[in-house]
Length: 265
Image (cartoon, rainbow, N blue to C red; front, side, top):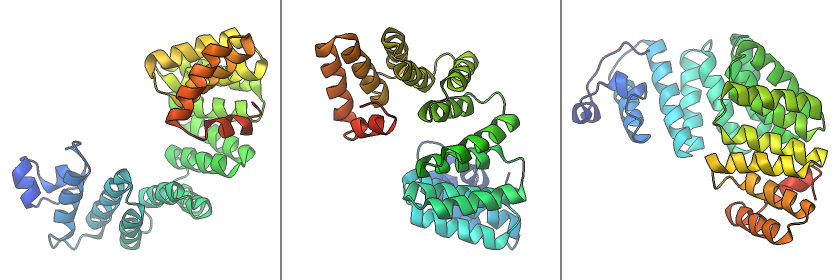
């Protein structure tokens, strides 16, 4: 946490210090965090570690707004000030990933892991980036590392489940999805992932049951709508399948192409 206390106009108006704002205590939008971090950066401190955290936190706020180029500039400053600080490397990697620059993202995740070999989020983010590149074996290795470091993370179990399912390792995928659901039975994406496994197994009714569970939690999850429509079609319910598929494509236009990449045409 930042220990440098300054007071900006934003801090005065909110009743929170710049430190609290920069650390994200006001989550109403990205703007309070940007204002708090800017107050710290412009406040005259010569403590490089404090400034590195302020730039990194402001970069996070810009990333949250989708302003990735501005975020990367702040992460650059943070890294210059404290090159042994793993977080801005990881967070810059996330910004590059969101821009679609996967190779630069992986370089940053590599750097974060070299600094902190126990950085589970960096392994998970690198895994997701490998997934986007279609390098599923590398993604699975990184998910293995991340799960060893954070074995109670339902998100990691689900992500590895999804990756196993995509490459056709359905038994391993099922075990991972079941663990994700055991850890948190009220998360739509875990049922959605297990539904994909049942589609690949040709078990249409079980797929529909899992997609129903996912859609009770998140009624507009496009992959669950499309998956359920696909399963209904295969089970002989053409009208129901058409309705679900149309609803999915209204939310995500290229959803059919995504499922085709999974081998489900």
